[in-house]
Length: 155
Image (cartoon, rainbow, N blue to C red):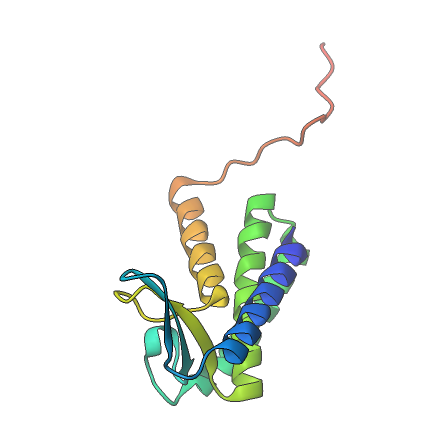
């Protein structure tokens, strides 16, 4: 589940970014559901929400540490499937934006809801992952016995 989620997010993120750069010009907004949703090609040289503009390179060592930590955690702890899914989303999203920073020097964003900064698939995956992990921490994840597990024999 971990690797499938990570690879799916990474590929979907990169494909949507390729589509956006091939189909839109920088800062061009194409209405999808006006006045609520547009495709707007932007280049984010900062970090989340455009903070630290021009200093996005600071995330490169952080991303490497997070990716390494997630992979180590996955193999060391064998987490529940829901945790595998959420950490896979986080890894795929982090690597999607990481590749942009290395290759282009900025992150390609294209989804524009006007009232929120423009974002991409990787950003959605990272946000959903972190919200899901926080919810699990807050509400508690219960370990359940796998389906078909042998029952303890009567005494």
